[in-house]
Length: 253
Image 1 (cartoon, helix red, strand yellow):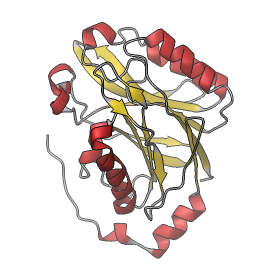
Image 2: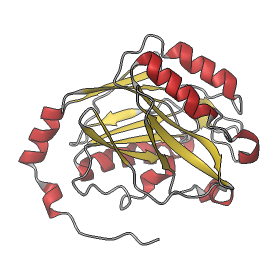
Image 3: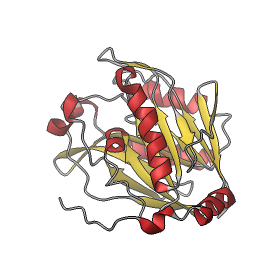
Image 4: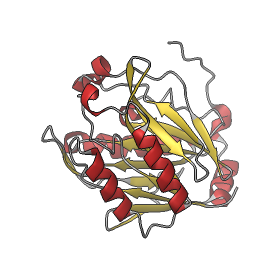
């Protein structure tokens, strides 16, 4: 397992304007060189409950992500609204440069905004393998539910993509840090910026935390960058073997 370079794009998502958002992303990532490019939750449209209007019905966003991953020779990941088999999902795609992909459907739907009345929850915990790293995929509100994200010795990092507003931003940063410490892993949390169609504001608030709770990311021109260091993580886990003392449990739907 080698080091892994991650770059996330902070941007002000245009409300329900898929084409302009995708064009903007293509321009912004032209000069990014990374193993993984991370995009925010619902990056094509913003966090919108008008699913019947905005949802992909023919994997449009997935096809676009495959093209970007191929051209950049990087994995590309982020979530969007998807219609499938009569249901809407907030789907987090992880697309590799060769066109193969995995996805995670957001489990914890944000009832405060009515997301649970529009979208259907995912059931499965999804861990992708990429360049020797085991990476857990999570979306926004999932951050508040540590049991589902508990590290059972089966992953090395978590990617959280979000639309997490300013009014609750302290919780976002605090919980990202907590997930890194309790799970002894890297946690990369990418939030959007700007103002959405509901007049909610989103400050610059994307970070990567190491397993000791320290911030290990930098931000320049709205690009959040970090490098996962395999040897550093291995040494930390060997010195502090807290995961060996974790509780056993079973999640029942």
